Image 1: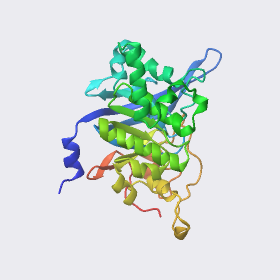
Image 2: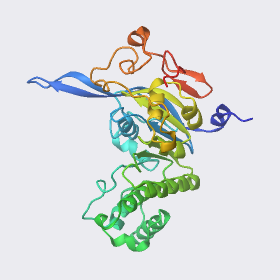
Image 3: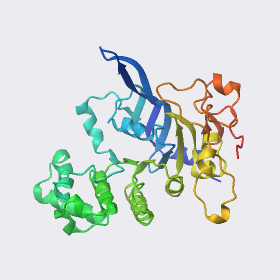
Image 4: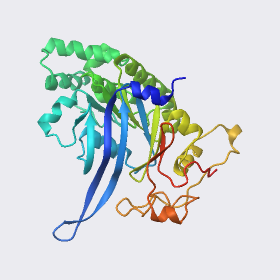
Length: 335
């Protein structure tokens, strides 16, 4: 029997994060000096393999999107190392980062906001080839027309403007722009959260098809655990900027180790016939990331927190093969 460990050993690591942090300075006073930091991403380490879909989940404000933006260099990492194909990229200058633009792309939550309303879709997509290739005008137009067909649109859409498309069609345009340069890694930042359920299914199917065709790797940021379960191979759970659990979809959904993961899973809507199932209702609000609690960041809301949780931050440990968590009482059920 081939285990996940065997499979991951056969795969090549595409992206590796080592203790990555991202702090946003808080300035105050007449001189606007730094008086503190918002710790948006706190000591994140992970590996993403070629051809894999890694989901990132957690409540709003947990640092999911900031993590994605930091990986792409849209935000500068405060500390830690980001390696892409074994090359450190976090400290590269702008010109040096250009060679990674073709390999790393992003699909945004709101495709309309990322498009120029006064620009035809064909021209918007053609800009990618103008900036990054030496293709002539006829070649660029043909490449754009091929892209439109690739993502399920029509060639006549070339001359239309963003407001003439539905939300699902605009997201397909965003996908076309992301795959234009044949990348190997795409960050999907809530890429289907603004779409109707039926359209979500179509877009997810498209992303799966493109992944199989081009061996794409996805970092799939989402708050919808149902979508993550369908789409992803592994799932990373974040809370207050920190990673609290990482495992395969099967392990994480069937036997979650961390109390926070259990609480998230218990909140997934189910059919009315299962209405009597237990649900964990977390008390209190998420702590201020500018002043996080000592010890375990989740202890202020955890129903099984003990004194050790308030004093000592739990270590990131492998409790089962390829199933990691940071909890003093990992595996204890709170349901």
